[in-house]
Image 1 (spheres, rainbow, N blue to C red):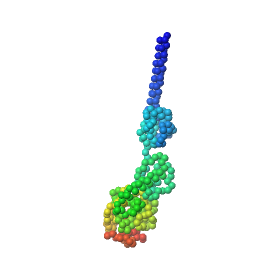
Image 2: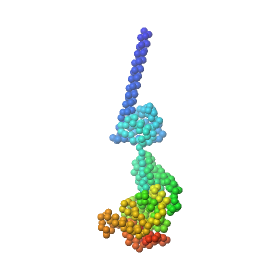
Image 3: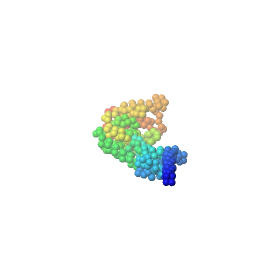
Image 4: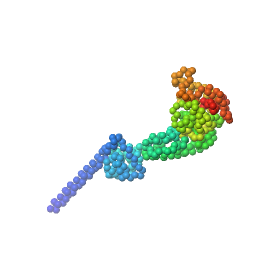
Length: 389
């Protein structure tokens, strides 16, 4: 009898062990299938679901966020899987784009590898502060309003990484800090040949250089010409300053009218001496460096060459030849005969600042200006603005 009872107990034990083993195997199979099986479909028929995990969140909080977003079915399964795989100590915060029906394993791998969604905004060189606000307002992941447009020239053109939920004002603050830091470094490396007397003046002149040419290779040359003009007491006579006085940093969208060339504004360098009171845009590093370290040259004029660049001249006589060539390019582009006037928008000055040379025939230098050799016209009189640049 004792043998039989012992044998029965052994059989029962083996049966129980087998049952438990089968249960464990079944559980493992079930867990394995859940781990690798397709997850929930994204809501509203979308292909992905955006989930933002805050910094410092624990596994339980992350699981609750994922469950609320609809990318996992069970918080307990997520926590168990994260713990068993060791992922619970490696999950990273950030914004994630989870594909529809992503498996639990795929979600965990996504969070461990930190494949976050990255957003960027770019402020191009030469864009105004008003345009910078427009750029930020068009970025849907940012929040808040910009009630006051930043001072012109106070922002650093660059590409900035931004986060969902970040305020627009905080991005502007970063742009300001970058401008201050970069300007300080550039100012410290300035050359004695620069004509500007302060970082603020450097930004004003650099903004004009930036708007005058889109070619980085030309910026030092244009900066040198404006430096020469200021040293000689000449007016800068820069078209972009006319436009800024009209639009305060937005595109004009048409040619400059003669009345606008003659209009007195604080920025119209055809009408004022020296520098305008503020920058006319947010210049980039190259333009600022060109103003602070201008090359030595005796050039004083430049005009478009028809290829996106400019042709430069030492004297006004040379400049008139270049202007005539540009006017011929304008005629050819419009399909007009050589004797025809270049095309112009009604009510505007044809090809400003390349108006007909005869328009400046009676112009004289402004008081106190020292005319360089060969320059027949070096300044715009108040009554009949000269077209030279």
